[in-house]
Length: 120
Image 1 (tube, rainbow, N blue to C red):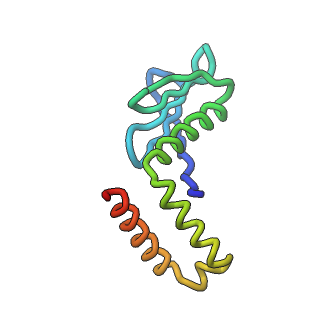
Image 2 (tube, rainbow, N blue to C red):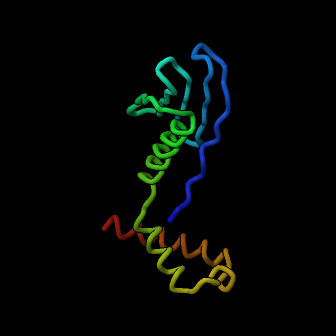
């Protein structure tokens, strides 16, 4: 399955006190800050929900799961599964045998095929 990059957290200063922010390549950033209630996180729009966690790591994990869920909603999972099945059928050395450029061409063709089949 697809591997989604980990959010990169950095400390920020502001009126929330001890805070951390993770910017994403798309959309709004994720925020975590320490409150009297515990470690609080905020996920971006559309729901922009807040949650309280027992630790900073728990809050980061929660945000990462939300980020991955959002990314997966944008991916054509059927397309990826078809490609992974093709790749496994070729054997464990398929990338070396076929070459990365050929694999990219296959991705392009499969993508066009999926687009065409979805419009019929």
